Length: 197
Ligand code: GRF
Image 1: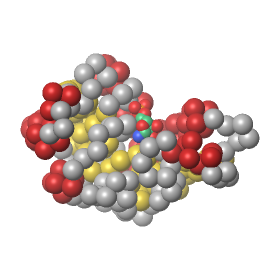
Image 2: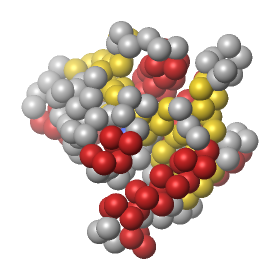
Image 3: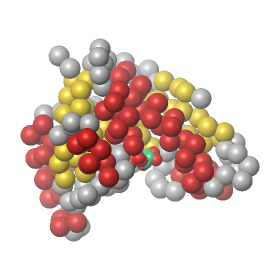
């Protein structure tokens, strides 16, 4: 029986597209819904074009009431009964209670070589630090931000003169390889990390 995968986005959804397009043939999972917290996010139209059900739970009307937003988000998610949730450019911080409700079922892709550079502006920080390499990490989501067990990483050299944008653009194709590979292993119950680049 295929695992059902919900994908949460906030923007263009290029990682979501890669994940959806990877779930074919003998892949043990299939996308069941794409949910955005941003109405009109570009990824919603892409998901519809790929034939994946979509939903939007706009976080703005909930203001600072994270719990009520997450209740509305969970109502949508549970209606689609996912086995796995993939955060893919989902830009809301989730409360420990929400994460606990999906313990062991939720993945995220973070644009750094965790545990380095948790949080935001990861590429700028790597460049600023004079690091030789940067990259991306797929990890299980736990209550602590960007901190769960690592499921995969891809490394990319930082080039002289790189800006955060040029570095991000060079890393993104690796994200599109890494996340589908990590999801397939996760859906197969494999937990040893995969390393690319
Ligand atoms: C990616 O850079 C990813 O590392 C980060 O947010 C961005 C999402 O881009 N989590 P997209 O919406 O998947 O194109």
